[in-house]
Length: 76
Image (cartoon, rainbow, N blue to C red):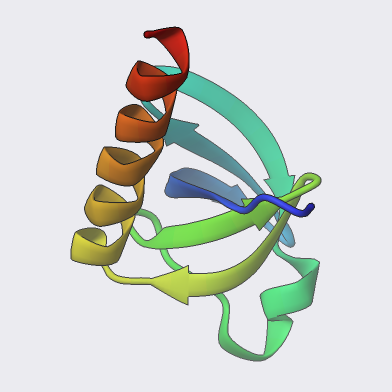
């Protein structure tokens, strides 16, 4: 199964970016979005270090709520 994580872009340098989610920061590649590069503050779905799709802040928030729910239920 593949899993894409919603993250917010906090810095950009060419086709590389720094992204943050839930207090965790990662360096990611924007190469797959080169036709429509995201800007600082945008939200993206990240899969194996690559931003693969821009998403809205609301979609990112809803995804994190679902992930939190899944984790809470798996701990029970």
